[in-house]
Length: 112
Image (cartoon, rainbow, N blue to C red; front, side, top):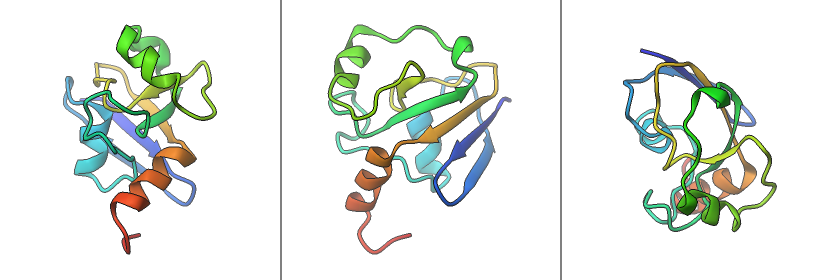
């Protein structure tokens, strides 16, 4: 199983992941502060993240993901939506955006 490393401003979380799980599902399972205002159905951009390592191993994004990223802040060539990226065989390093972390805090008032 590949290792997925999530980078938050104040900590890093590295977990092993079964292929096919989304980054958002994995983040939620391990307490990573990835926002999901729409519940992970590609209807917002709150799970926007940057793939720092392993981007080339991922399939190209769908048209729906591209459309949602148009709503995101600070979009970069490595930008993806956590709800749309499924873990494959390669390890990934995922940096959370300020937008995503802010959404997480809004969804979880009083936590971390």
